Length: 132
Length: 326
Image 1 (cartoon, rainbow over the protein chains, first blue to last red):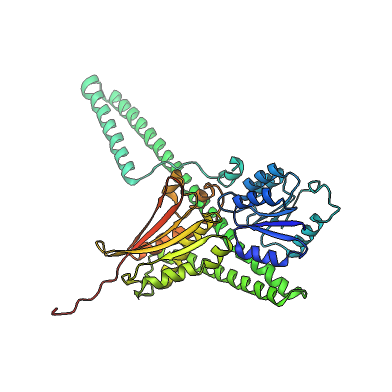
Image 2 (cartoon, rainbow over the protein chains, first blue to last red):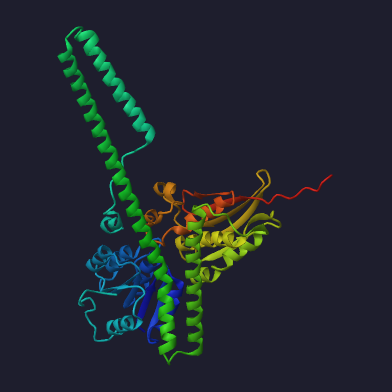
């Protein structure tokens, strides 16, 4: 079963995403950046929904560490900030998309589905884009 | 963290403003005037005993011009300093607004996503619907608490008195303040423990606000404690000082030395960003400080060398009325 990792310090958001994500995926959770890096290295998820604003290790640092371990993993950044510098840095580090909270759940789910499709062989070969 | 990203918000910050005070201007004016007088008397009493009226006027004019130039230069320096201070204040206000907006958006994400799914998704099971409703309710409660914190900070800063002072049992607000976050601690895989002695002295205070102080401190500890860590809430009675002490200890990374002086500041978010990650707006600890001080108490923290931080606040125990004639 393919795995999706939700890394966000907001427990309510994790619970909501876990409930709404397609049931065919195994959903993992991390509540801070360090846990996200550990879980990514151990569980090797296909997709990571990674919050930018997290304690212990911020999402951008976590992204760099995760990409160093698993360059092929698709990472979608979630953030409450519309800081263009952080967005650019995240995309430079290999994030597939940068989604601003509160986000459109349908658009996020569509992104999740297209990312996790079996034919999405080269998951990093995706246009970088920002979504609000 | 990458320096570029970490300092992105600081990029537009104004430079450090020059110090300015009325006393400093007065002292400088006296020095300039005194120097002028010394030069004037030195010229006319020593160097030019009887130079005639023209030379006297020219010398006087020269000294006056130099003095005026000095005063003008100093005034420009002061105005530049004031301008920098205003820019700094404006920048901090913008930072605060960004921080508040960021934190208010956070619970909205879960609420909106959950409520939309409840309205549009027919495939959800009854259990899933119940869970989404519970999370939406929990998020809206958090939003309300954050709004109340902001309003309280504003009111207490303006010197408004605490409105609901009454004698209260500390056990109640300590246990309630911690219990609210027990589900979050469980979800994070952290152990949240409350240790209270048999009997604590009653305090005269605002029970709801004191509960929110405990909740804020526990919430802060949860944020910085990794999975498997422990948060211990404890209270003691310091009989010598006649005060109640409440502590919240965590097993997180501790507080770096360079950030300690700023931790209870209103704009501590920047500092917390540098604590190895980014956290919420940082108003929580400031709220705690404002509320505790409004109760006549104090708040501080202790950070261990091997990690772990303990936040402690103390408030005076309620004064018991002595019986007359006793």
